[in-house]
Image (cartoon, one colour):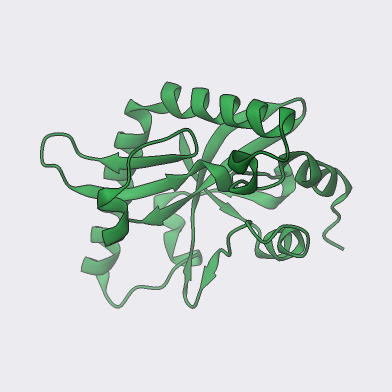
Length: 173
């Protein structure tokens, strides 16, 4: 799987309709997405990655949540909130290239930039190891939430069907 940057205007558009869609702009740092996690018809779904927080240590992997944990060291690098995956039109997504990272994030110095790229490479390796698991979770989560939109599981997730409609009708003009 690869790193992607979702267009800020598209994210802002989606947040008007679904409060579960996560913001991507944090000052001079953009939140990245991982994908393609799931394809439903013509819709490609991407999932945001989040920094690990102390509360995540106690949480278990589930259908809508996955920890990126280094098994050998026990270090928790990040988490994927699969419940917040979103469909993104091809014209609103850019694959992140490490040599263009400064277009999306600022760094104090070269060491900070190098360390961040190393972190992304480590997280990507952890994601690639569990890619099939993540894609299976995403499909099952999508199926359960669309079959039972009033379930407690669906209440923790983005409204996938509604977002597909908004994705299909999106125009960035």
